[in-house]
Image 1 (cartoon, rainbow, N blue to C red):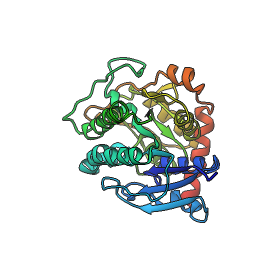
Image 2: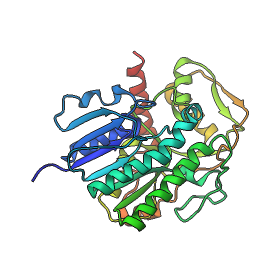
Image 3: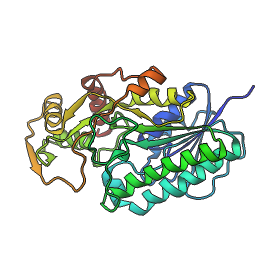
Length: 313
């Protein structure tokens, strides 16, 4: 019996590349599709000599053709940080709508299991805390962040429509803040921005008064959750993230301490619709997937810091 085949859209991105590694380690053949809008070849270079890996530079908003059988499709193609989706608003909307439609079409044709990478951003600036999967969210559809929030909300609706109408075997992962090696220092998110500023001895930029909260999950834990969801039978959305919450200003202080930096903290105006709180309720993941994060934040940050030090050499 041949190896199972997984298609990973956005496979040259931060999360996608780690997923490619994991699926190959699970004995699968992986076809990585990426147009490199925000993904990087350096994330997958180490796989190029692996006979179970194939990279195709491709924009998944076009019709996707794969000649072989496909067992799994993991749709991770999308700009995923504010700086990226504000720079590429139309592309973000297109990959969330057209890209999801094309990826679902491939799954239907191949009778594959389909997993959508959704996001905690479907909850918007939440009025419920922590956020559980039955919360419908508080999203501004015409604000600058709406291009990402609504693209993912549409992608979830499309995925469920294919599940109900075509009986497609689908999964939806609502991914909360994730960090680790292969993040881009310039991707605009708080964690790499703080590390970059601290390593250069610059002031750390905190927006608002820093009381807004985030919950950070190490990438290996996140990938474990995605894999468990993939091989489960759960069709409803599942939150994947670390439920340990920290304020942004306290997180900035933590980065300064871990980098032994002399940086100070400066405060700037809070961007429009920036979520005030972000903490996943992971009860469903615990109950259905027997999953919860294992890597504590300090341990994960030390690994991430070392990665950034190596990339800056």
